[in-house]
Amino acid sequence: MPELVGDEQSTDGAPSPRTRPRSAPPDHFTSADDITHVPIARSSGDGAEPQTAARAWWVPAFRAALSAWVVAHIVIIAVQDLGQRFTPHFPAQMPGRPELHHLFNQLYTWDTAWYLGIAQSGYSGVANDGVRFWPLLPLTTRAVSAVGIAAATAILLVCWVGALLFGMLMYRLMLTVGGDAVAARRAAWLSQLAPGAFVLVMGYTEALSGVLAAAYLIAIRQPATGRRVWLWHAVGFVAGLGSGLVRPTGLLVAAPGALEAIRQWRDPRGQLVARVLVALSPLMGIGLFLLWVHNVYGNWTLPYSIQKLEGLRGTYAGNPFSSALDSLNQVGNGAGAFTIVLVVAAIGLLWGCVRRLPVSYTVWAAISVFAAVTAPHFSSFARYSAGILPLLLVGAMLTRDWRRWGWTVGISTALCAYFAYQSFIGIYIP
Image (tube, rainbow, N blue to C red):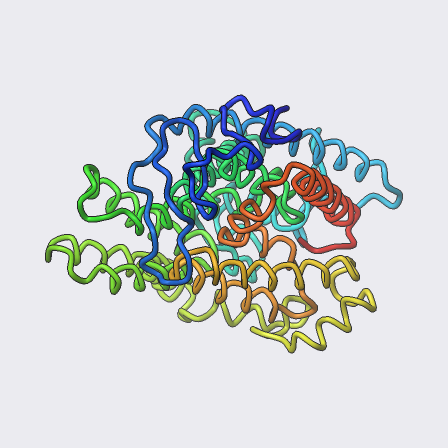
């Protein structure tokens, strides 16, 4: 596949950095497909925007995302088969519920079993602490299963299709910040093969949340003079609303939305009102769920406060230094030093966000990294960091040399398989 062997053999025709035209400034990406040469947006927050979007980004985006999607699914499904053969076998089930039996049995372990149970019988049909799981994935699964597809199949269908769309939108997001076809392809690959991206193959929320976050980030950067700006406002509002309904941290995308509304405060009044509504939409989404919880359970804070119970997180935020020691001592997450490596890499990529991406994206990345680092024992850090899209963008920008890219995608895929296997045998909590 051309994405794995370097720029020179790319089917999209993007020239290698070694063959950059003499007329292109050294800090500019050179893009095929008639994309205007624009610099990477730096730390100004109102940095360079692409003057002309790719005229037809769907086809190359689909090719790049599909290639990565196929590789990721082959690797993770093979690893889950190994996990099924492990003795003692780690069952796929919820507390107090019968064990699940499926061809892809290990893909239904951990949170997948909860989301599937909620989709099948609602929150009233699962244990009381099931309210800590946000509703959008179960609702989407139930909608798909309403046409006659078994819920167990529907949840994987939703997540697998969502993962493919996520990869395509990562391609488009890279173009939004001024990247070219080479960087965009690599962003699509990293979205599928980041160390924590194995959950995209399972029934987790990361596929849906990735689609929603990418669409939201693209929408908020569209200029007021754009031909389809109102369509993008609508996309941003729906994506923000969905982000608030899909994950407990989905409300964090309101931060870049608010910063972009402030940055573009000189827009016509109608446009500015639309941007403010887009910025508020993640809070509206989470507010809808918490209001429902209050009406049903009498306590609107329950989805968050329940995390403090013994056996769950135990707290909202932990000391990252204690978590680092726990991780090295294999306490709490089972991933050991590899998690420490990912924490250090995330902090390094965050600095890259400061230098290369708009302020709004960088602020969201910083808040998200902080939330992930303060998770007790660095629990699920690999999964959390794989969903911080600006880190993936910077990772793609820094690996334009094909040798560096080969090492990066190879190591990332190996870690993805490692974390998946540890999860499928019941040691690592994704």
